[in-house]
Length: 222
Image: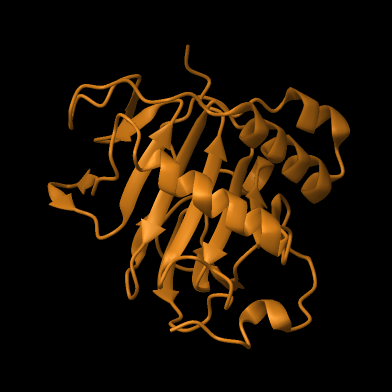
């Protein structure tokens, strides 16, 4: 159930959790969130349908759609060989530009943003009550920023260290419209989504519940 008093109704300030890890609340407007949700639904009708990626032989509760590269079995490929063999659509230009704007606004570094060319978007839909365990985005070949956008119900995002899945870590609540960027010294940090908070999606959101998360990455692959 959606709420008239979602997290976006409260005054939340941008914060740097550690060097390279920046949280910017309310970065996407309501209109942008609704439009991106519509794009998400259209991506689901594409050549590679939303699917539960296998991790250690077990399907995730999260449903995934990929653009640019297909991610499965801890590797990237241009076609979804683990599903239907179809090529994945490219990352649209508007999403690349959105990622570049995110980097410059989070880091203040225009040159870094201009060099940022995300060639993969991993779009995850978290059903109500789902989580994602501690993991490290380590299939990419270069240390380029990861841009994360949240839409829908709020989530507890756990940012760990770069060596182990255990402490030390920091928790931050990501609400609909929030931007989170981790790069540089924070790029290889383990991270997780430990909880989805029911009833926290904006009242205008089109979906019944759950959360959409878009992560943009630069793979360094050709």
